[in-house]
Image (cartoon, rainbow, N blue to C red; front, side, top):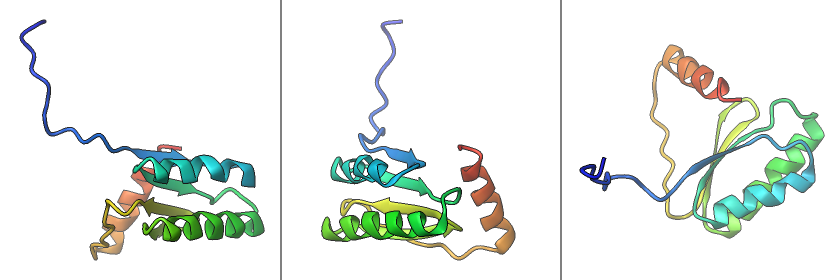
Length: 107
């Protein structure tokens, strides 16, 4: 199939999904933001003290890189490098619940 053309609209950026199990896994998360990728972090299954520690560390690192953070669900956060802007769109609770369930199905 040599007649196929590349799709020029694809972005080189990625959204990485991270479910850290320990504090040592946070370095990989920070590297994703340094690589100019968005990061979706699920901390819901962790003990609350470790989840808070990881949130603080990743959020602080994101802030130091001039990025942004948004909590999109209980224990689920979106971190973005400075090349992205996170905007919250106000939607009905039903719509937000469906979006969260769709994201939660990925892990």
